[in-house]
Length: 343
Image 1 (cartoon, helix red, strand yellow):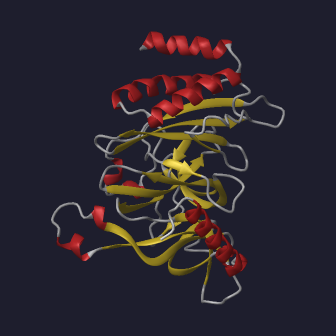
Image 2 (cartoon, rainbow, N blue to C red):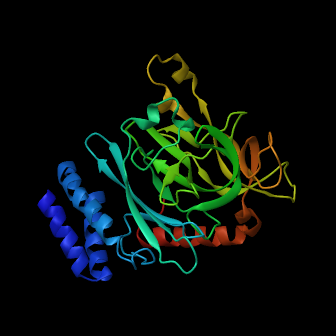
């Protein structure tokens, strides 16, 4: 294996980024769609090694890698980092395993050369089953695995916020300005459970080479959470995305927020002695995380505050035209008749 990794290293350094991209696209398709889990796992090790190697190239940070469509590729507006995530599915066990690469880019001044650090994201086994996971700050070596996706209505796949929070400095806790980022992700986990994740990321300005997962900015109660983990059953769906809400039906003022389904437990689950989470699911109401830029909460601002039972606003509703829907229905019926499928 070390020899193979060495070959990948030499090969990546000797060819163009476009050639490496073609190889990554080919390997990525096999890692996602291959049938044999052992073979996919073996190829994935080379896949990770190739990513780690090519991303040290000085031009790789801004290279698009558009053809590697099996890998999520996201970056915040300030280009502080770039994060790649993907998954391997064991179809026999219906288990999902998540992998990622985080590339941190910074420089000490506008005239200084860029510095690059590439970190492999290592998923913690059974991490989502630990009760304190929403309140822990983690490093890339102990990552809550997820396939991060691009939120709707925004230009960048990573949300960027500014606020103030308490951070440890030696033996003291100091209140400092904090730039933090938010990722929205999905974890397929196993045949019974899925998870949606609101993950926060922050970079200590005094140690710019270090990236941490988990910033104390999510307020569901008086004690902040580092992330939000939303479990739901395999047979249900759960939405989590950027959007708006209104305080009452018909209201014109909209509030920007991260809006998601409220999760409740079925009566069947409450009677079960075993893990009830497979029966968690959306109950038809919605919650939100609203960003407080100026408003204060216990002396803190620039935080994400939980809102229960909000009314989502969808701009698509204002563009709804029943004539378009009728025309689409008629075209579909004609197509069915043409192929002899009409009832």
